[in-house]
Image 1: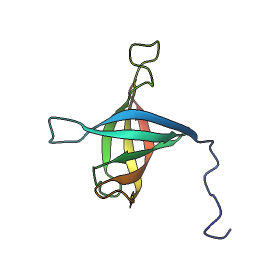
Image 2: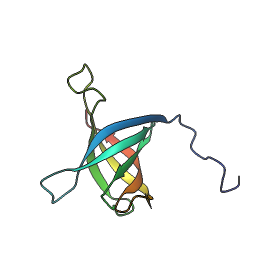
Image 3: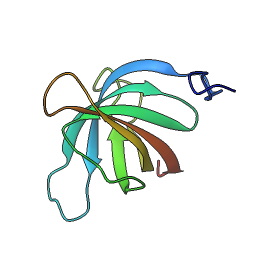
Length: 101
């Protein structure tokens, strides 16, 4: 298989929901955007620059606050991080380690 071939088999759903990133040692969460969701992980855009394999908790808010959907709370592990064209903004691919609720 050549490097440019898509290796992920899970279907990815485009989103645009806010996500809170709770980092150890910080009182306030970092706010970002969950741009893509799959069975095994998410793509998040935020100002946080993670370490490879860093583990933290996230809360993906539903698209319509006050609706019937609850936030997705999960513990995730960073698998990749790339800078975006907008300075200070990064795209990180995270793997879902545990769904908290």
